[in-house]
Image (cartoon, rainbow, N blue to C red; front, side, top):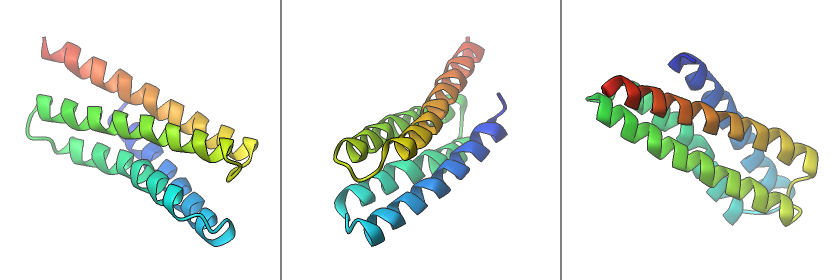
Length: 118
């Protein structure tokens, strides 16, 4: 996978997360969890973009690791939103699948980069 695929997928995911946050705030009057998922879900792509211009391979890996943590946190918030009935199962499944795909891509990118350091 090239970085541009990861970059594009994370950006499109961030757009969906922004729209989810808007929905939660306007339709469900939910402000705390919506801000949490907004912060973690949009920071994935921002960190990937930041990593592209890392000062070194270790800096790149560090930024990607932080993006990985943010993706994992986003998955937590999505599950919590589903289990507290703020979002329905189909929406959760769709967003969670995208998040899982990002997690897998980030793990692969980190492993590949680490292997290229050896």
